Image (cartoon, rainbow over all chains, first blue to last red):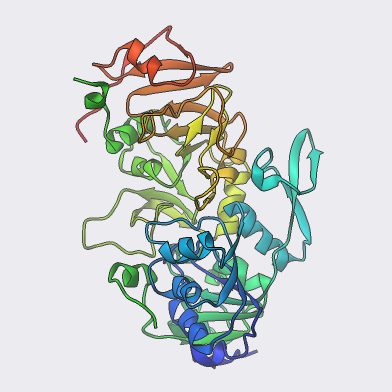
Amino acid sequence: MKKPVMTPTDAVADIPDGATVMISGFGGSGAPVETVHALIDQGARHLTIVNNNAGTGQIGLAALIREGRVDKVICSYPRTSDSRVFTEAYMSGRVELELVPQGTLSERMRAAGAGIPAFFTPTSVGTPLAEGKQQQEINGRMCVLENALHADFALVKADVADEYGNLTYRLTARNFGPSMMTAAKVTIAQVREVAPVGAIDPAHVVTPGVYTKRIALVEDAAQEEVLVRQGARYP
Amino acid sequence: MSWKDHRLTRNQMAWRAAQDVHDGAYVNLGIGMPVLCSAYVPEGRHVNYQSENGILGFGGPPPEGEEDFDLINASKGAITLAPGASIFHSADSFAMIRGAHLDIAMLGAFQVAPNGDLANWSTGEGGVPAVGGAMDLSAGAEAVRVLTTHVTKDDAPKLVAACALPLTGLQVVDRVYTDLAVVDVAEGRFHLRELVPGVSRDEIQALTGAPLAMDDVKPLEAPSL
């Protein structure tokens, strides 16, 4: 089935206040910055954002937080060389933080997409991040029960889509994209090219089209890290 | 001269840690100093460096001006791919990490204790905590080695009798590379293995928060880097 190819603006138009939104990226690598900027323009508030980090500089997720649209961030590593926007919002109590070990974060999304409601992991046992969670010894090792992490929307930067929504990714910009594409009800793949059906070798498809609900075409997409280093600001 | 004049540079610490990586090893390099190890593979060895964001097989940074920030290490620094590299998504990367497929994890630290406890994600109340992949790496790697300065900016020991800061992993650290020493963590004790020339045993003990066994101590020497 052919998937709708849209502008970022149209792709994010129905994201409501209070939505949980996954945003791909490891730092600026894989961050769908144009689609995040469309979400800023759209104006939705009280968002819960799932990302590995919590924004850098004054663009993308950092700008979404700075504009007061985010109530809560679920992430593994909110402290970077230029994460002042999140730090200020967090220290002043404007944004809540749920800190999740990175492997648990990605596995919670993978589980959500795979129909696994929860799983046991040895990660975080004996640390403050395991407090309040059910624990059980399995094969002689203590484990923590972690719940699947679902979202209403996912904004994911892929590289090329075909018309059926099969996706490839560029280098390590892949990171959290494939898991997020499975874990959200409405998935938006931002791509630089929409190729005809059959143009991607089936063995090279990373995200099969069944997971792709919308394609946001941005032919001249920027790389977020490069924008940050240029001192860019949005809006 | 004070002990401060004999400290190794960050690159020398990474070089020293890389010398202990055996031929054929699969080694995760964590955020901070550990990622510097990718520039130092000992001659004649094949080492597979893994990065949590989804690479197996990477090398040092590219020449200036050739950076591609879609090809980065855990510190978000631009790197190069090694021949035979593979790229995969985060859930697969952490399956590799948690599933005990990696021989060594190199991590940074705020504090390490003689029982192998590691604290490296939170400075306690008041700051922004950041755990990243450290807890998964502590739980999953066969060996955990730490690269850290020997003391904090305020000269407080980072090798301590017991971690006061929130823990990352329990009883996981095998060896610590500092800017002054190489210290093994075994049988509930710190064992001083190497010490930079110019620093005395009394001085290194005074900069360490728990007793150092000193049965067999060699000089810690590294090339200028």
